[in-house]
Image 1: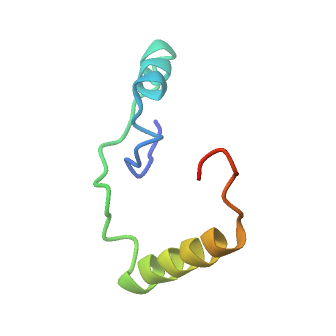
Image 2 (image 1 turned 90 degrees about the vertical axis):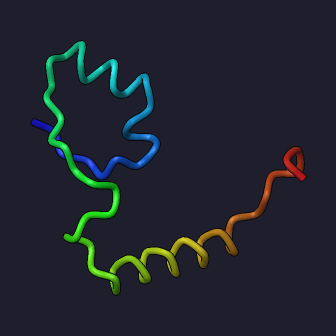
Length: 62
């Protein structure tokens, strides 16, 4: 049985199809689980913002 956080990459059609094809059951779990504390959520958000500041945007996207 697999447990994931329902993030978009985890519930993409290709991932869902693979899990079904391999007969891997997925545990129903809310996207924002109570297991993630508000503090933890803010820490991950702050880390994401800092990383995005450090990573240059490729020239072809601008």
